[in-house]
Length: 431
Ligand SMILES: [Zn+2]
Image (cartoon, rainbow, N blue to C red; front, side, top):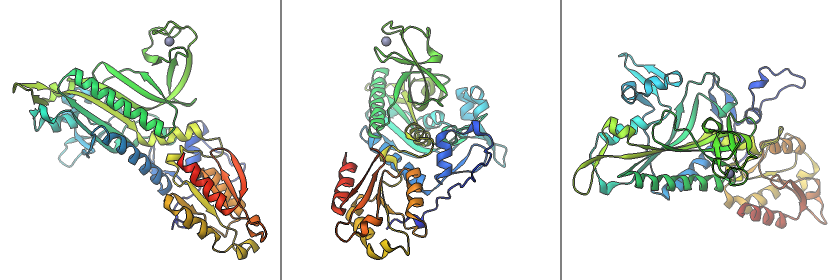
């Protein structure tokens, strides 16, 4: 049985009137996640992901896995450490140098705590090259910690030095097939975000130092986002300001009343063509037995960043609201305070409701009954558990016992019979 009394979520209690330093560096999501014990600051730009948020993260990983397996994505794990020599070959050791986390082992060999794995995965395929055209397309991905030496880490998980990222690398026989793969992966990215019911914009992006010519970014629009996005309300064409030739007129439909917004980048897709395969000699044998270089694509989703960005988007200043799919638990039952007269009359009611909903596997009891219902209710609202079932004084009414249901998603509170409450929650969770 899931009980809050057993969960490690060290809440931050800030005394009233306390002066909070460095407030300009705090985002809403960072503050709320620290206050509720979802994360804890570790060192400069690094965070502990605590058990409640770990649960959310694993939910997101399962969702990503589902949509990647639909397009034959195969999950693997590449070493976090990549030889600097490999990055020197691609030229990125120099171009990305300021953001690379570099280590040296006892033999003075330089390695990188990888921010991304184009070199590494291409090296893997090169080591077994040429592969047969029959084994293509090949779509490999991992969900692992990545590292970036941020000059100014800020906003908690939105800009950290260590973060969890899903990165996929694809290999095709020609550019036409690589574009098919590109469309297929992009389609799955939209499906993942729609599954989460997180509104997003997909924009034409800069390929930066990745190589290739086609690239898109996925953004969540919020005012603390660090990318400027120009979008056309008429044809929905959207572009990163960095790429705009003219920031005043839509380049697709010539509309001149464009929207300027700030976005948090949570996904990025690229067609790399043969930039890495040619350099590192990753090839395949075509139908006539001749070797050719593989056409590649790469695709990222910032897993921890997506969770933080969705919290940023949905929450108020004082209470977390989740994409329902990512809430650590979906239903919480709050039994009466210990020693209260309700407690004596409603014994076992919490268990009865729990057992009726336990098939959801996302239900928990806030059994910290040494605390008042009011205090626990405040905690659970702040944590944003979507459905709260309160066993209070009305539950002790011998004529017409009822329980209070808080539906945070629809901002709705009502007294219901036990059966109605169970049905209500089940119905809401199905939609
Ligand atoms: Zn337009």
